[in-house]
Amino acid sequence: MERFDNRTVIVTGAARGMGAAHARGFVAEGANVVIADVLEQEGQALADELGEHTIFSRLDVTSDTNWATTVAAAEKAFSPVSVLVNNAGIAHTELLTETEPAVWRRVIDINLTGQFLGIRAVVPSMRTAGGGAIVNVSSSVGMAGKFGVGSYVASKWGVRGMTKTAALELARDNIRVNSVHPGPIHTPMVSGPDAVAAMNEFAIPRLGEPEELTRLVLFVASDDASYSTGSEFIADGGHLLGPVPG
Image (cartoon, one colour):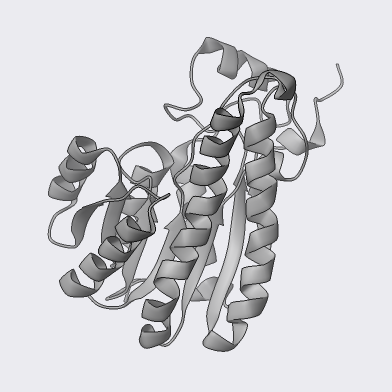
């Protein structure tokens, strides 16, 4: 028996990067996976590659209508949802005083409100399933500040707080809610020689690989973490510790 045999999992932002790695990991562990993303061509290609235990659903995480459609597709293709990985997100680099309100709202809408809408959409399905696990992807900057990415930092701190409230509110439904906090990961969002060079001064002097985060997400979503809810799981290569002297 694999850890997720016959369980239905929705992964958002799953067409590429960390989300695609998570989708692969859940399929390898026996799950039926909904690859949810706005990137239709890439998402469908991944679903075709992974086979009969996956479907693709176009999902704009800021749309409650899209969320309802995705949950319904999951239930129709497989069964009530047991796991949600709220992975979709964007970053924006700009000083707070130079950030246009429309840009600020877009970051918050995708990174924070999108996760709220996901929780709201899947809970009835999880109740039908008898419980479940929600994994909200925050960031290491959800534990600290970072210069020049104020909208992103605010959204990821918001995810951290929302996770704790959701964990309290959903505990009696046998639904666990936790957040994971990746540091710099080798994905299309974080790449290039500058990103690699910036890691040289930290405890683990490299970017993380998506598969390393997948192993953490699988643990947090599984019954192996059955006594954890409202918790923060950090995988940042020691980034929050600061630079290594010398």
